[in-house]
Image (cartoon, rainbow, N blue to C red; front, side, top):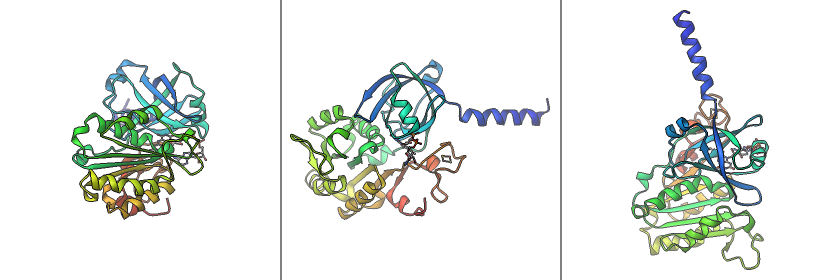
Length: 299
Ligand SMILES: Cc1cc2nc3c(=O)[nH]c(=O)nc-3n(C[C@H](O)[C@H](O)[C@H](O)COP(=O)(O)OP(=O)(O)OC[C@H]3O[C@@H](n4cnc5c(N)ncnc54)[C@H](O)[C@@H]3O)c2cc1C
Ligand code: FES
């Protein structure tokens, strides 16, 4: 065989292997709400398990064999050993098929992909986390990383919203975080989503954020110039969260978003995720609000 034939065969194998998922077993399923599940996953092949590392904020492609692939953030902390997690809402083909799986079933995984949160840049800063609904998993991995080294950071405020109390995910850990004196945990539901006895706020995430967070920054923090905010959720929510943070004196460079543009290949090949010349799968999904504002609107 000529060397050029060898090279092209090698290229074909490399390109194909980009898309070959590794088998991962669903070791535990946590039913967060009526339509949201957390999967704890472990690699079937110990060689894959030993080689696997990821950074906080990265995502992967998760596949149900014979159905298709879907993109989810890796919602666990990279410091948790032996397994990793994703959390998904059942909205379509792949997530519907995933919701029917049982513990012990095997799915496919490609990744990790994308950039990650810059934890060094967060040291000493007051941190605001604001997320709505299924926007919380990309933030939750970062909250856990912060809590693992809590002494390195300033005040921590978490605003977690959902349409109704039935749609609030991670209820068990939120209850634990609410008991901690070094976290301000604020949970809120949209007006009308609060049952009798509801002990949280009623109001949309941006409104509650603007009412409650300035007090914390003034009393316990070092003011808006020292704050950093992290948000993920429906575009309408993040738009109003950015406006609220800006009114509080927090600059666009201090606001970090996780974008969830539709993806297919996740490796910069298909052009499905790009906004102008920016490939969200390669350069993102994490951007600051100044970078997002500079992107074209027609995504
Ligand atoms: C970087 C990134 C991280 C993500 N993290 C999470 C996560 O942690 N948890 C989670 O539940 N989801 C997350 N998503 C969204 C998730 O990828 C989609 O909801 C999922 O692909 C749906 O797959 P499906 O086959 O079930 O839906 P489909 O059958 O493909 O679609 C069902 C409906 O949802 C719409 N839809 C599908 N994907 C998107 C999208 N990305 N944005 C807007 N509408 C969409 C379709 O147009 C269709 O109307 C993330 C997306 C990205 C790009
Ligand atoms: S998802 Fe294919 S280029 Fe980004």
